[in-house]
Length: 110
Length: 114
Image (cartoon, rainbow over all chains, first blue to last red; front, top):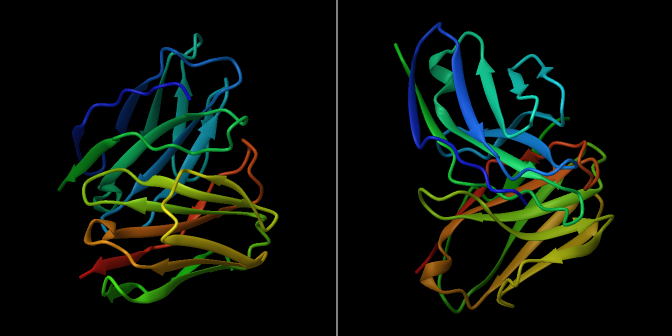
């Protein structure tokens, strides 16, 4: 799997958009980008995934650059409940694995 | 039902004990997974089951023994564990193992080995 780089921590004011960056400069053409988050003492929660195009669902938007070397997860209106560790993961099918990196600890400030 | 249910939520066991962790889902998912998470670390994959057959064992010590008796149930049998095996054990499932499917995780079993 391609390696991802995320900032270890970020703060965001409540009600503002939280933009979480992820670098995956060695990503190959058939690797997907996944985002999960883990709220303290809970299991990870799937947020969104994409291959080339930008994606949006009820939780977040995923913006993937045209060269696919980086992506941004956007939480449009952050709430205190969005405080969590956010993991960016790239994955190919051949090994069937979902491998977590160290993630970004996002803190929403009241 | 859109949940993965893990029992028990907490478990304390001695190094000579035998215990089992249980994971159940009723979403019709055909892939199930065990992860181990130490404090302040990301989850680490242990086992992958696909259509009730073990497809990946990440070189996990034999004191951890997985079992998938049917498509809804995944067990992790524990025997002769060490204190360093204390961790949060997470179960997950997905529709299949392919790329298009996100994983649904349970809340985990917090295991303490004394």
